[in-house]
Image (tube, rainbow, N blue to C red; front, side, top):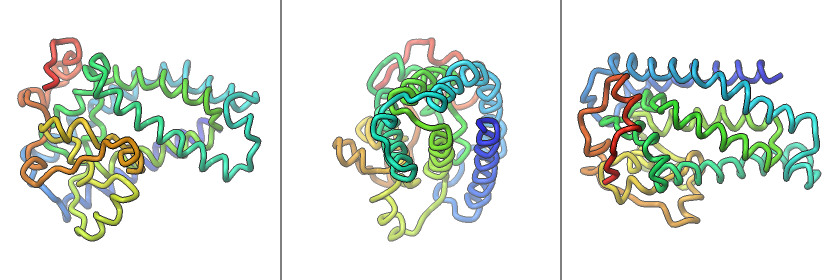
Length: 262
């Protein structure tokens, strides 16, 4: 079952990525400061490296945790004894709530920021940015996922469904797509849009250390981390270090050097 659902997750990831990559060509919001194909190659290489390296924590951490929940009454959901639909909704919201905090921790805890900052080194932002994560961050997030699975008691199907929606949301809100203003204003009251998340990728620290939501924007509203930027700031993305956007070795080594979060 896990293998089938994991393959389904990969298929959805690739299909949605290709759709957004094409839409960016016709409805782009910002001009590319670097060649699109070069960005695609670089970020795809990072994704391939991450996919290979993350097989180990997936096999020895996440999958065993999911199987444990599947075969035993364990976690919060086992105590509530709800029907599957209600259980799925609660699990989905709890996971999204927890991922909000994981993202926030990655900005507020200096050790985690060392790894997450690699994602923010991108001085542009498009759907390929959704591939740009240091394997160290993904490894640390695996331990966090195991913790969530065990505490919540998340069934396999619900967890992978959330992961599918999360990856689609991550690709969407990193994409360089210009939505009509009215549509964007309506959507961002519910979900993270490209403009909403662009605020989070500005060099300006005020908005970079805000807007942590992954799917639903309600978490930023509840915890007062919703910050709006302006078109000028949204045109200048990344970190103050402008020389590390590309380079596989440089990006892999980046968390292990002295980093100025300012």
